[in-house]
Amino acid sequence: MALNYVSNFQALLLILFPFIASVASDPDIVSDFITPPNFFGSINGSFFTYTGLRSTVSEPTPQTFKVTKATLAEFPALDGQSISFAVLEFPPGGINPPHTHPRASELLLVTLGTLEVAFIDTKNVPFTQILRTGDMFVFPKGLVHFQYNRNHQQPAAAVSAFGSANAGTVSVPTSVFGTGIDDVILAKAFKTDVATVMKIKAGITKP
Ligand SMILES: *[C@@H]1O[C@H](CO)[C@@H](O)[C@H](O)[C@H]1NC(C)=O
Image (cartoon, rainbow, N blue to C red):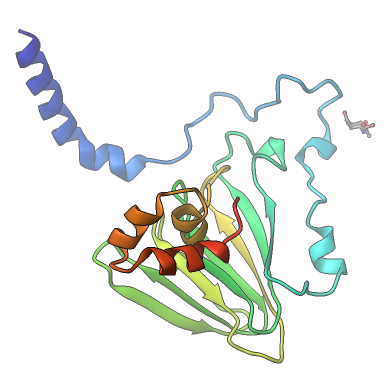
């Protein structure tokens, strides 16, 4: 009986899976918007306003790559709206290292300079492009990608929209080499020796 139930359930999942996968996104809400439980003021235009990106317009490009986010964490009004935003600033030669966003695809618009971008699909096929100011590129959900300002004289900048209020970021270097995975395991995984792993780890800052 229990076995029957499991196999029926699995069969149902197999039938439904393509549908479930194709509609996967932030859950729908049953109100116009969501107010945080600890919010005590009046809800007016200010609640739907985020000013935390002003510095990206008013200040010069930072010396190292910088991402300034407007996601659920910084901007609570995004809760339930399935959308978020980030401003990416690249000094000359700056890089946003390989990473993934597990919960959203990303739509990037270059607003300054040029950017070399790429993502790698699940068959390990790379898709790369050099974008000019005004060009847009989409990074499919969950795939490893990066952006690089190959120009060593001029800064670059981009804005990115995400199809989730909380897209999440998994940085490949930090996730693999900055979280205390055993040196021996990493040496085996990368077919190298412990000394090389330790050298790489020394250059990775913990999250
Ligand atoms: C809007 O709400 C905020 C926070 O609750 C409050 O500080 C502000 O005074 C309100 N503005 C107006 C015009 O009512």
